[in-house]
Image (cartoon, rainbow, N blue to C red):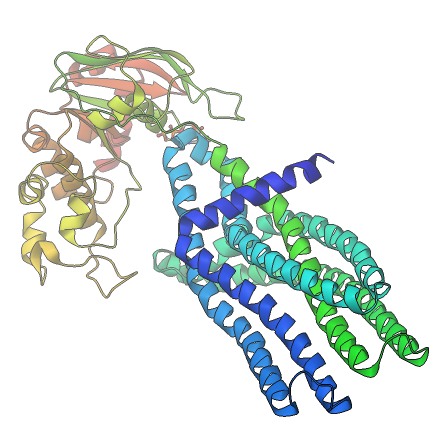
Length: 581
Ligand code: ADP
């Protein structure tokens, strides 16, 4: 019942969206609907005139030729409205899709990282992308169809009422089962979409694995094409089974609807024959009535189809509205702050949703202006999570993060800290665009120089304007280490007082890695840095080293202090250097 109450509101909202997307286009489409209704009325009137001219030439209002010409004209207009509308709808559909995408992109841009990483968000986004994007347009098409067919139905009803009032209720009665059937169809369609989204997501992932360049080498090396393909095909089979079932259900509903309309139509035509036989109407009236009945049943078909379309779209629209309304309000843009004294965490605790054990468990940490601080520890010890808290991407569940002694809002922190993740993005754009992705910053050439990227750039065909990557255009692909320098240049370009580098040397060769770490202070040019690494040799030059284990800081100090303390750091350091000897 609540759904029925909400439906008109959702439909009105969708119609408003379409009008906003393309006001002129909506008006034009409405005009075509009106034209269609008027033309249909013209066909009946011309039909009546033609029958009159044929059957009673002496009393006819006009001659046979003008009547036939009028009939031809009305039929032609009535027939061309459809194609005109189809073409107009292509523009309208595109505009509406753009507008809905805008709202969707606004929503995803607002969502913080924690929301984004939750599976509920991803599934809802996918469902909306797959099923709800085209709905506002479907609603408009249905509303336009509804307007046109309502006009048509009214016009034909007037004609029929004039000829024989009894014919009308007979035809209208056919509508009741049609509307009920449409509601049934709507419920099954939404449930179907819900079920299929999960399947589609999994299938899409496998398609990516099987077709995208970044996976090509490993998938071939492991000879995994066959097994992955088998999983893909199994999902296809599931999709096919579900789709067939749904299509059969919809075919049954369509057949029942048509049967209802056809029965009413036949009944009306039989009634006309009966009326002629009993002499209640003459032949010309019967002819006009037959045309009117035929047209009316067509218009009723459109009308019920439109109502069905609206009912079917309602749950998807609700889904879209829920999604757009979800997530936080758009906050103000963050402002970049200088770092005068220090960034600090006190008792920071953070748990990923649904996980019992905190990934970061009561950590104290500080990074003073211009310092290089290292975070070391084994895989899964919480280094990346901690870095995300420092960078304002996650808010600690407990504890505080301070910037020069004040609890700065997360957007300001994000504007003042730059992070290069281990799996940084390789933008399929030019070298220059890869560096200036965040907009304002220092000169990109200077950033490239500091990041040690210039020798690479000099070897590229178009220097800084060379397209990188092979996914979109035929660009140049770089080695892992060269890409890593591009990412470093991007971080330096943004020119924030603190940079977080998560395994910045993972893809560099030993010489380049040694060079990066021995020159890191020059590269950073006075900025503070939080260096994450599990290679202890590369972080020994840090001003302070935090050793993490299971979400906690277990040791802290300079390399020499930690070696002298002979704790976990010293042990792991010796282990690693022994491996090299
Ligand atoms: P490190 O960087 O030291 O390897 P992480 O901070 O990446 O460690 O991970 C710490 C713990 O948090 C691990 O147990 C990891 O499985 C978990 N974790 C990391 N990222 C997520 C995430 N997005 N969702 C859920 N758990 C996560």
